[in-house]
Image (cartoon, rainbow, N blue to C red; front, side, top):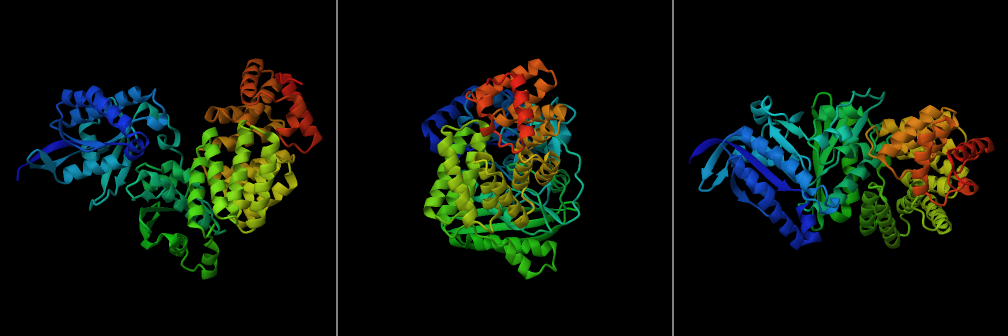
Length: 586
């Protein structure tokens, strides 16, 4: 058979199944328009030959590797610009992989490892991104203005040897935060430490991502119950979702010794979980296993994996401690499914997703009235609504928060998630500070690795007039989730602690940092206005008051106590006076 050397470009549309399910006709029409206007003309301009297309992808051969990479970069930039005016849910983006290798000619088709590696590189590229094999990078590195990041050696699916991979850094990617910027290595804790990375969804259906994500969250929760084990919080682990990862880099960025990777395949009534435990410093595989079972046995499979991981980290661990890691949130798989979907919505932190999360938790409770964590997360949703200025009916939402929180606390005496979410609901929304603080402390006694529980504890300490203790607790929260997408909530709480400690410059800086990340943070806007006013920064105080009026148009000095449950009269007096100086009406 005929062989030749060629540059191979493999491209695939992100979220094709979801887009087709939402609007098949529109997706097909928009894809055709993009092909006709942007994609095919550029491929032709750079001398590429479209070998074949699928519904959501294409395979292209180039005689020049430089032409292939230039074409790919130009395509991605053009697509970014073209789709920038389209809503996120409808936006069309592609992943692209490029390899240089020997190919086999089969009529009009091309085959061989050179093609397979390009396809695998496409699979690990970020949405709107581009991954190159090392041989491609070495050929173009000094001939392009584009920048690339070294992802190290990657074990690509069905490839016998690892491939060194380089990822293109677009302007957007370069400003994307932890995914694109290197971090100083964190010091390892004084106990065994682990990060559980998002599991690959191998079901062939992107809409099943929530199931794989929920599986990882449950494993993180189970591992967190080991008091001797330092476990990175879910939100920081999930910053690596959809990215090609270098395990050593993950270990340095998160400050952990071990990394757990895996995959979930859900087909019909069967589920398969695979996992591998890696020593981050050396890259050594310490353990790997596969767990197969019926869908109704999913909790047992999680328990088996958790016990195996713990056994690999500490062979002398007593079986009794492994048993304590086992915690089934509910025996109703349907209710659990709604709970997982609700958790996925909570993490989005926007008004519509918050509403959806409440509906999903309500459905979980309807199917399983004893589901403690679902009650707690519903209370958490109401806390987020108040913190973001989304409250529609204050009296009704306070009553519902109390009902959900009390049920969570009653049913979840051994469930740290139920207890800490119930605690912050009672403390923040209902103003029941002592009761809320007690529940959060119980939660941390059960699971001292919860970043959220340390965050909630920090807030309660602020409200109780203990700002220095609050800052220590909030620093714990950040250490357990150093790259948390919701780290703005931690900065907002730290800003409040600094304010009540009398450090107004630090308070202003922290609150402004939080607002830059999330413009919905009502409490952070208050701290900016109050701190700026006390520092004599009139313009910044006025801008903050404009933000505050947008977020909470009915807020006045007369109803300020209902926003921030401050216990000590002297703290409330300082708070009220600062906001009066900023311009808050009586």
